[in-house]
Length: 79
Figure 1 (cartoon, rainbow, N blue to C red):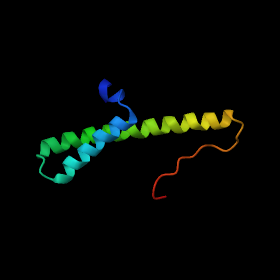
Figure 2 (figure 1 turned 60 degrees about the vertical axis):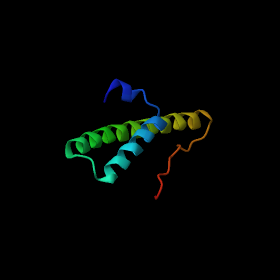
Figure 3 (figure 1 turned 120 degrees about the horizontal axis):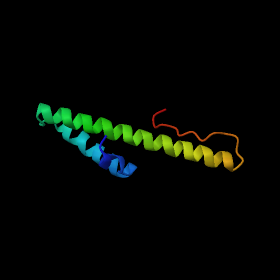
C-alpha cells in the first residue's frame, strides 16, 4: 500500500472505494484499468477494515478502563 493511502482517513478511503465500485459497475472500463481499479479497491478495503479493527480495540480498552467487564463488539449490518 502506498504511503499516501496509509494516511487516508476512514471516510476518505470509503469515498475512494465507492468511486472505484461505481466505475467498475459501469462496465465500460478497459480490462487493464479494471484490474488496477480492483487492486486499488482491495487495498482501500483492507485499510478500512484495519482502521475499524483499531477503533474496536480502542473502544474495548476504554470500556474496560471504565470498569465494564463486557467487551465492545461492533455488529456488522445484516447480521
